[in-house]
Image 1 (cartoon, rainbow, N blue to C red):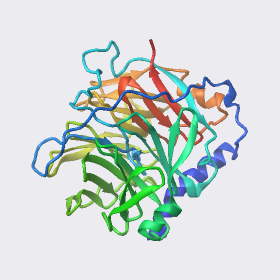
Image 2 (image 1 turned 120 degrees about the vertical axis):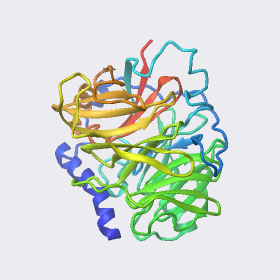
Image 3 (image 1 turned 60 degrees about the vertical axis):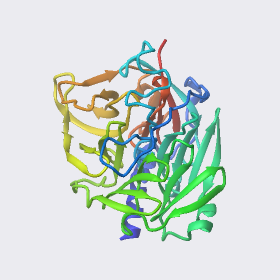
Length: 394
């Protein structure tokens, strides 16, 4: 079963490369390129407790992962600020809104994960100090300006946790002290510096489906998700919150959980999905988990079949979601109570995601993606071949 799950995580990238023709000699030079300049601190989340109440989210993945990572693999990655609206001078002191137009620039081009199914892009994450992290199944990277450098490798990690029967990195998250948490197979590690790590918890989650999505609630307090459920993990305990996510009749099964500071979370699957789910975590239990959008999406009033590609929580509340409909890819912002006709705002992106894909000579760009939000309205988007930055237009 483990080999089947690992194969599944590589299938979509193999198909992606076939569609792209395996090209590495792209025309990305025509794209605007900007360095990943340091962004303001993501704020400090309050220390979580084991009592009920909306959790303070210090960092989370896509996706898918991440998110994130992340996460998300991994689900999303977004780091919440000191309050639900995101701190760091964002709430009430800026002129931009979550649906403000964004300018799209390429931050890193042709990174080494492209073209290697064993290094499938898994998740994306913003550290509390503004550094950008992303992961593949066998490596965690750190972005410095336009330079991509190794942060942790599978060789280093296996020395600490042992061989995980073919599984690699899955979920990513940061606590407010800047400690990185990551899953590697069925274990969870911590790291505070490049190429340094320690085994934090062994055998987290299910042995059949290692946790692929993390949301860090506080120091040594993590929400972990996989196909086999959701757990709250501390240094001493693992509490089962959900025994399984509902099955989907489609190839994408690994859940990417995006947790907002309010406790509301969004669930997508690990590649283009036909359904979005929503639930609430009150600090002790998962409540009201169910379908949010299913198969169609009609913010403009005209329903059409769609694929939901990737999503993340917004530091100011709500979520960002990329959608493909009628062969066009678009970015949206959703409030936490959105319906198909209310609370959904389309975000104008220049150049558009489709135009950027064409200029990069990558027709499948953004089909499999990870996304995370940073302070100041900045959004980072990871496609198969690039890392992108979306900044609020002046």
